[in-house]
Length: 372
Image (cartoon, rainbow, N blue to C red; front, side):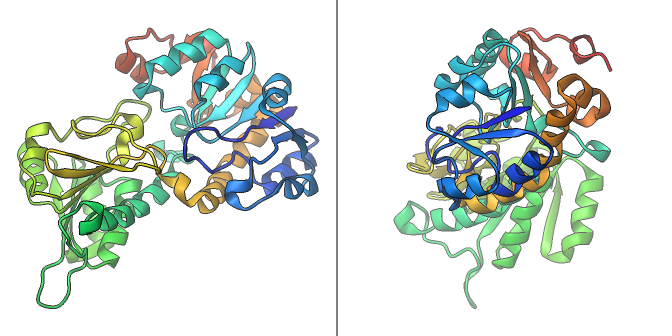
């Protein structure tokens, strides 16, 4: 199969779909890999590095989109890329369609088959292709939040860990999944006072066993969220409903009740955000002030640490790329129910009910589109 790796064109996105090591593995399996010139610059890999791995370097995006049967990316296709998609072409990338009805319509009109990293499932309902970036984003959330609390960044001038004789910052994490767990780990390592709020008692028990008495675990109710959000110096939104829009757990009155110049880092923004006041931002302009609270809502947080993120992502995605390339689309999905769950768009049909609910676009059952 001919596999294409375009240079990412979303603002401030520096990751790349395949590393040279992944390219070499695919070439070893008998596939041809086309990599757009400059695609690896954001991770410190030049074109020659891809050539040594066996790739063919394309001078522009046209060759990638016109010739590749499978396109491997990182972020959702931008409008210019959507227009280049063609019927029957396979697209494998993060999509986050629930937050973007226009992208859904564009993909449907293209006739392509689009599989989303974030809905591929693993054992026990895990999300193996979302987890690496969730780990990065969770750790970055505390790093970004600590900076935003500095006065020059708009914050209240609070050191996350405090010092002897001065209390540490209150960090509240909404959601105890992969993002939340990694945020907790870093915030506790920086000696902040940390509370996690989650609606799963089993998960709260696991976190209690993992972190011990230094972590305050709270069962999620409207009253609890309202109470702890009000006292937070740093609020981290880490909720996830796979494939669906993020639930709006924090409304505007709750944000208004927070202390002046406190900080919200809404990691769920790529699925619409879990705070009513959240709106997408970029690494070039990452924050804004609303209701007296600093909001950091960058939709591609891991893109700032592009080298770490790309290698972590490739460790997870490579087996699935190989499966699609070696066996072809139908056989790969029939052999792996988890990869089958990644199918979002197929031949002009939407396959994800949660996306249909969020966008108002009709969905077709997955079993109808691709019989098991």
